[in-house]
Length: 427
RNA sequence: GUGGGCGUAGCUCAGUUGGUUAGAGCGCCAGGUUGUGGUCCUGGAGGUCGCGGGUUCGACCCCCGUCGCUCACCCCA
Image 1 (spheres, rainbow, N blue to C red):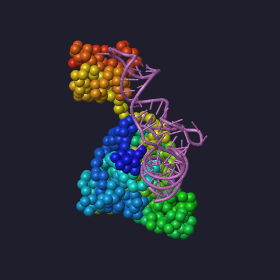
Image 2: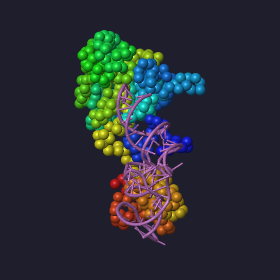
Image 3: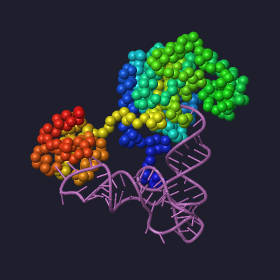
Image 4: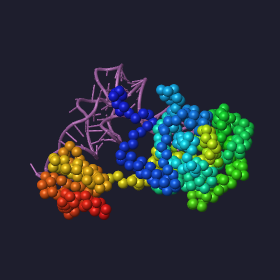
């Protein structure tokens, strides 16, 4: 608003989330946590920053994220650290460090940081939730991880989500494919877009992902990954597709789907929200990373996971017109106290200890003002205590849903308050 | 990093070819209703018109700069 030095704002590309929007966040995260638990996942908490190598080695030194988007800094001990740009690398680092029994299944919710110019659905600090499974390359686990994401999107009300599926193969078959692709690009280099005409050789797979017409025209005529998988990788992929089909989850083969991180092998996938027509319509994605644990210094361990951006899920919900809050956040009771003896504090305490959500007013406001606040709070009931009640050892309970003044209003002895309220709230 | 749009009350915005005390709705506070919310009526608080400079007798309005927000490109969640 103004430029005065005393006025601080959230840094560029970051946002505060206040009520009532924060309740939707609680609902999303709670829904995900419940679902992850049903699928056998446990929560993992890991540091927001790591040795920069954790991210460089995993996501690829040449990747866009590593080269220009990472928040790298040096601490007072001269260590080079980075704020996490995504969730997977840290989780795999933790796996390598602690060597928990496998199969190991962890879910997380975390901020993620990318230094870039913000725009709709793209922020310097955004939030992701996701899961990782380490210690098995059973295609059934690919199916379960994708199914978890799919069921989650259903649970939060999204209907227009498309699953894009591809397989990157393993080192060898992908290596052979990359050679074929490179040869094709070399032969057609002059037809590539301005950027890739010069840079295609550093990472030929990136060109598949290029959205410009020039590159598309070239790659469409070139070799496609799924056609060059080895026997094992092809079989794995087929079992994933069949497994998803058996669950009624429809997938679209996306032969040019190459995700932004270099660690992926075999199964890769992305969820596109069709309600979002912007370039930021990917609400989640993931894949298998059978080499990542080794790259981070651990023993060879297969892994797979997915992550989803919370801000984008919210945008997709909005675009689809989904309004369900997923979580009721209105109080059961509002205590109105006009006694000037502050009985609201002990009364609220008793009700809260009984498990009820209780709001109240402060600053000895007028009864009218307190009733108004009770109404605004969304509380189902008001408990009124004035001089009259106090003298009689009673409280007045009023149903705020009722438009009538005295129909539903009742008095009970103050020591019956908790029992009565519990009874009323149940109905 | 590059380009477009926009900065007027807590929020959403109006402000006539530059002219006197800058407005509305919502929200907030109080009163009408000295014990009762949601409707209604009345009143009130709240603005250095993002900031700095320039043009002018006079600038919310025009010009320049600057900061911020926002959207888009690249790439991604």
